[in-house]
Length: 597
Image (cartoon, rainbow, N blue to C red; front, side, top):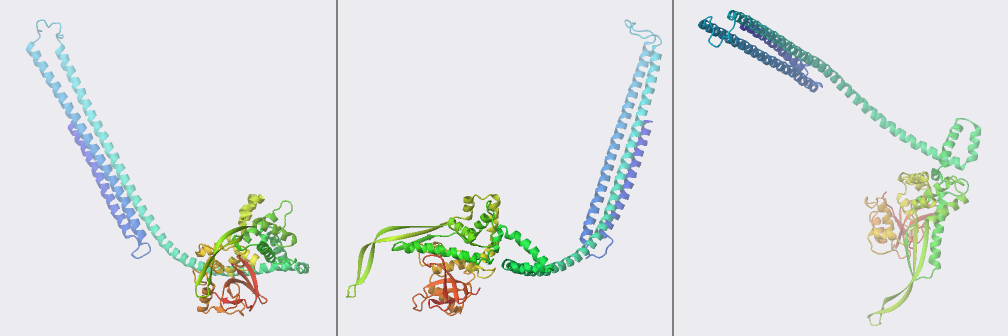
């Protein structure tokens, strides 16, 4: 009976496994179908923009389906293994039951045989252990009853085990089939979504190409707009500057225009308001290049202070008896002087003033700051030296004579303070220091050139550099840059140094030269030469002939030429960087080198 139940359980298990196998075959078929769709897609065009995306989709679908099959096989194998284990357990229990039943039967037979041999008389000495006369019959009945109960319990255990095994197999198989079906559905959904994505990708690619073309057209239009805007801004700036000049120089005419009414007057009023904000700030210094009616501009005041500086140098030189003059040092750069002046004047807590205009009071304020930033010191020293002179004895022999000479040396030193040092001296707060830094920003260099020298952007760059060196004495920065260990006549070194600052030596516009003759010949050899009667332009190189012997012995840079006067910047003019002027055609002028700027 137990064997029959076991076979039934095994059959149920086999049926369940068969169902799982069928489900597996169905899933494999769905997998193959899904894979074909994913691989083939709905597009036959192999070179379409979606080819790459389709390949990716097919690969993803294949991975999803393979994972489903893997999970199915895994669950099926697990169920089969569990079923085998349950069958083995059931067989073990049946075998154990048979063994127990056989043992009990043998024990029963043995008891019956013993009873028949002994009859109804008990052994001698065993009366107390012998059962009652009816004991064998009762023992047989009880054994049989116990055997039936044991058999029933074994059958019940087998049935229960079989049922549990069948339920577990069915549950596992159903779960595996459902998992597989979900995997197939997921793969199909993934394929459909991927196909839709592919279609969208194709559309997006086409849209991207259209957008790229539109972006290119937009970029071209933007460039054209930028050029037009830049041109408009330049025009507007020029117009604004012209308006500013008109506002400062012609206040009465402006008032008359406003009184006349009209939209132009409204625009002018707005401009006045905007300019007023700038003029009243530290940036008002950039508007100080125009005459506001006082007859003074920033340029004229700077020239006067420079002249005063040169006069003090000359007073020391001419007022001090000396045999040898040695000068050294450098002066504060003018833009730093003006920046300190602008911040200090406009932010004075006791008497703040705008710096866009110039008058005698502001001129004195500027001069005071200039002399606080620059200092000229001098001293003399007597030195006894042995000098060797050579002479002819009248017979063609050179005679050297040693003499002891005491000479007086005049040493002049120029020193200066920086803008940062002046900020410390005046106790500038953080805001004032920030304003000072903004004024001295490199991006404002062109504005400083316009205010100080009237030089606009791209016009006379070398002149701007040269003018910034005016007041320096001794020439040490220039001849040492050239490569000399000690002082030499440094006018040509100065011109070369300025040209190098502008990059003109590297570009071959101006040569690097320390001798005036070599410099003039360089321009002549290239056909870039004009004689003394030429009216030069800013930035051209002027050569001089002091002795009138037809050979050049000094050189400088043309600052400008106005009303028949040539204005120059020269190094080693009285051992200093100075501004000079000469009539056009002067006999002191040798000629001009014309750089190909």
